[in-house]
Amino acid sequence: MSNAQRYSLLAEQLAETGVDIEVARAALKHQRIETPSWGYANSGTRFKVYPWPGAARSVPEKLDDAALVHSLCGIAPTVAIHIPWDRPPDDDYAGMRQYAEAKGIAIGAVNPNVFQSEDYRLGSLGNPSAAIREAALDHIIECCEIMPKVNSDILSLWFADGTNYAGQDDLRARKQRFEQGLGVAYSRLPGGSRMMIEYKFFEPAFYSTDVADWGMALVMALKLGPQAQVLVDLGHHAQGVNIEQIVAALLDEGRLGGFHFNNRKYADDDLIVGSVNPYELFLIYNELVAAGEAARDVAYMIDQSHNIEGKIGPMLQSVLNCQEALAKALIVPRARLAAAQAAGDVLQAHRLLTDAFRADVRPLLIAVREEMGVPADPIAAYRAGNYEAQRAEARGSQLGSGGYAV
Image (tube, rainbow, N blue to C red; front, side, top):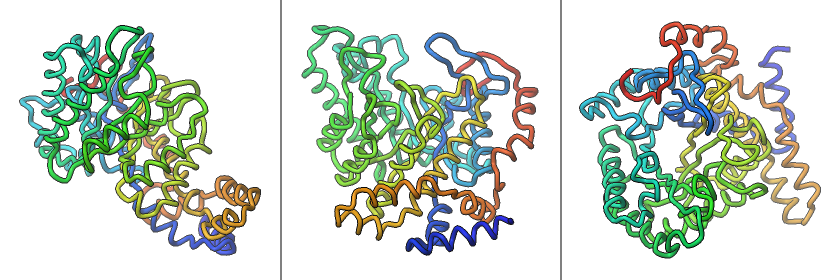
């Protein structure tokens, strides 16, 4: 059976449930997933960095790899940058932007780094030292100034701040320092841009974390103003937390800024999104699709550390897993589901949702990819293109953070 025949059969089956496959097809063509520059370079576990043959050694090579991913899937047109990891020579951010555009992609979110300096041992904006807090704030403001140079409208903030021991610091004072610092940074945001505040319930701090959960991030965002929103990282929650409910709550408040997609088995494992719990990923997308216009401006970004499985292939697989999850969410029979919910028919409502999750949406995805002019099977095309071997031969295998210069 050809894919056209399989597509027609799927369309007929969906029509019986009240779902128009053409509506889903149109929505999939507008999906966008941002990949991170740092995901193409060498990274490691807490114990060792295992250099990967052909990993990007410089920012141009990171952009080359991101462009390859986009060319194979058609839905990853932007790449997030991390400063100072991606600082160009002579601060030539216009040149960086132009290089990306020449490759058919664009720069996305700008991520300040306020966790790797020796000064940040006791925190950045939460640090008891006023001088260190000022240095961290200066760096965040610098990133605000970089944003218009690369045509970015998202400032993405994650903080490692916290304490390891009871009594180490005044918890209320740390909260107040954060609010003060974020307030200054917020005032320096470029017009029309957004500040996304990420949270994490532990690590590297183990007694308290200054922005520990979505509620704390939301409170800070509400105090700052409408340009401040919450960023949800799928690995930053305790076991058993209902992430899709958090997504629904933030959507309802108009404060869901975006995602850092990954997956975990234990904590912040940074695995390929959908590799451990694809049902959770589907349920998250289900809430996003159900929200309609309320989810219009949500930013979708990958944030993963591929340490043993390669670099470009796993990034591509993550993007494709997000595409599949959206496709399944788009074929949920919304009218029937709403009717079952209103009637209190618990079993039927659950079955309608799980039936969509179990559906084989490959004919739909192949049709979309063919229409967009990308390979029907992007992973197979990546392997057939011998891209890994070519990069390994050209770049070699070496330790390094993938900064701007080799």
